[in-house]
Image 1 (spheres, helix red, strand yellow):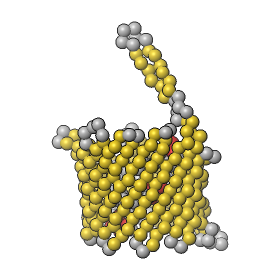
Image 2: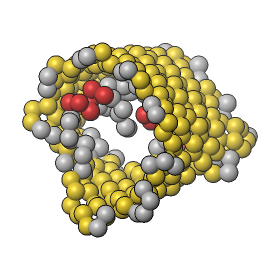
Image 3: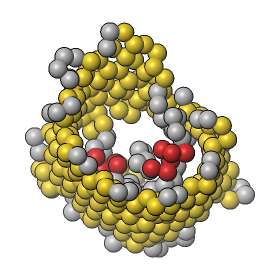
Length: 317
């Protein structure tokens, strides 16, 4: 998940900048990424040592004539489940100082930038990221244009799916909204086999779903006052007539090379209510080397709360 957090950007000054390995006649290639690991403690009998999404990326750009630039990027990410590498995003584009930016390929849309109460490393409410609503990591054509402190984004995923959004930044305040609609969507049919315990006969039942118009909406705001940054978000998504809603608030406070943060989200999935609480602290022990500890409590109606502590580290390159 992308974290659009001013505090993190300040804490990791320079860490997110990939190293340029080639530059000749207006063409540049950069490599970057991060190694990530953590310890997950659910209780004294449930402690796991895991990779936490290590990744590397390749970026390239080429200066063309008349203020036009071509660029491309791909990110390869490690997934512990199955012990595999996969392409997290891959896209190319054209950018002009006057006419804006056009991007084609696999990527997240603007909505990923708008969970503005999320100051964590591994938590946060990302219910809006659902391919069934066109708002996940999708192949798409996206156009964006900046007008002073404002930016407008328009995306086209397919003939039935589109996205609209924008951001505005002024005097320490950041605002954003993104709406995605996926019309004429039919959820894939599911099958379930039932075995008769007496006869051993297997009965297969197939469930089909009606066509539906799905959508997602997310709104975010963030305000920075010296070392303190406050953020709020609201999101709602409808997939096959099932509504999911989440809203929350968060705060981050800078303490030199360290920071502390807290988040509170209220969620409703279908008719199941719940809440998420996150408390955390991070410390940059050396340039591009970061450690953190997070406590997360997830509570849902009809089940006991799920509490975990994650102690992790990241090395950026």
